[in-house]
Length: 60
Image 1 (cartoon, rainbow, N blue to C red):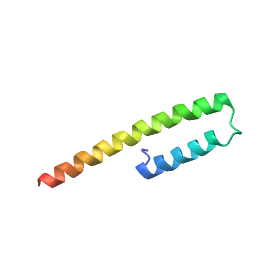
Image 2: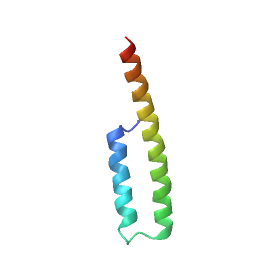
Image 3: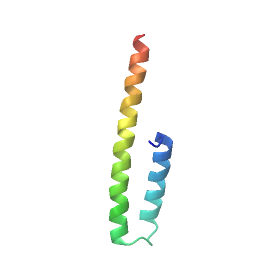
């Protein structure tokens, strides 16, 4: 199941909090950073898709 844009942003915010909390170790921070990069990529895809839909609707 694909997560919504809002769910992805929420997860990304939690990742940022965890990386910045000064309690997360280096290895976990790196793993979280990698997950965050994947989430950003997914968000960009969702935004591009939404932009295309809006453009198509504007042409009708």
